[in-house]
Figure 1: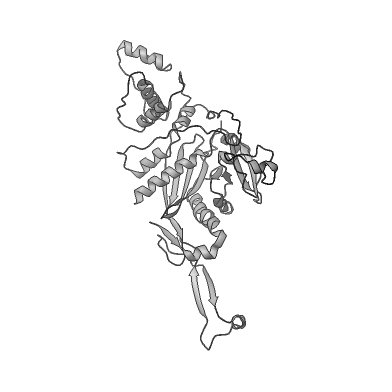
Figure 2 (figure 1 turned 135 degrees about the vertical axis):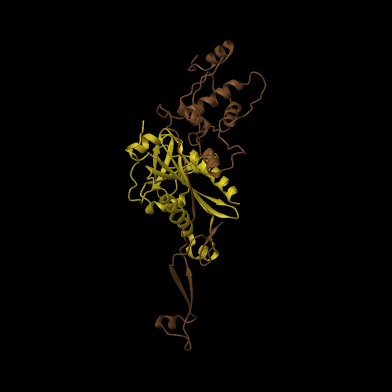
Amino acid sequence: MIESQGDTPLALGFLTVVDQPGQGLVGGYLLLNAHARPLEFHCTVPLRANRAQEVLYGPTLQPYLYGEQIGSTLVKTSDLRPLAVFTDCQPALAAADHILSPLWLVLRPMDDVTKDEGIATESSDAASARRIDSGHAAPAGMALSRCGRNCLARPVASASAAAPEERLLELAATLDLFEPFERIRAAIQESQRGWR
Amino acid sequence: MSAVIGSSWHGAAAPVPQVLSTIFNPDPAEALLGATTHGRPLDVISSDFRPPRIAVRSYQFTPGAGPKTPVAALPTPPPTDVPSSPARPRYTRVAPPEDVVGMGDRLSMLLEPPLELLLTNASLEFAAQPFPFQMQGVAFLYPRQAALLADEMGLGKTMQAITAIRLLVHTREARPRAAGLPKATGVQLATRVPHLGT
């Protein structure tokens, strides 16, 4: 069983960004203990880029907003340093350079097609007869790791794109790492209702 | 409340000045020479591009000590012929009752793990796997101070009520109490809850 070390509770961070129609981007960050019970929850106010921003930032706008602005702000808000931070938004991986904990992209179960041996390639003969219910390959330039029945990805270029550490592997094997994001979305919706 | 990044702000904090200047000059040669046009300075339009600090709402929770037993793995989905799309476990979530008005309280209920995970962590044993409607009944009872669960005979009201109580005791939101019951009821409860003291 994984236990906390010293006085610091063992925590896992879950970061996501929701695009609320008509309002903007809202970030949510949930810290869970080893039993998947909530420790802290942080969320931002809706954030919108104006037209000038969209034009001038171009394709870098999304990673900038998701990762640098929302992601790093939320993670730094908490005093707890989680064992790892997980996100289901690929642009939020841009926060990896601004936070201390390792940041992993949790792939949807639908995306989990690699079976440890390779990613489905569009050039193969089978690509012409792909099942429509089959998952998608991992994003380009991402290294995959398996944690129990979860599939995690990290940029290959990341300096610390090593395999997940043993404690994380042991903990993640007991959890569904995609489930907490549903909680965050429900909490964001609830908080938005409360602010109106 | 929303914040718009860029030169116009609707945020809570003051912008951090980081200025990116764009020089508009019809004659690139003059711009290269650093010259002015007809004696007047070049038109410079400046915009701030770093947004203010984003306002963050924070909520902290104090979960119970958690289960005394190690976290057990979630039930593994049955293997399928299409390994790329494994079935995920079905989750039943606890929704905050309408009479809970505090945002922190509502969020703490919404952010609780799904009932299936709580039951797994609590190592609660069932004679038979509860039906989805029974899980919904437990999710209805669990966050409420008082509730009335009404259904037809034989659909598992007793099991739902006992499961909700066991969860509350396990999460230390309720304490075990001694209860005086008619002997027949006590015997019936004891058969349904193996760990219940008599």
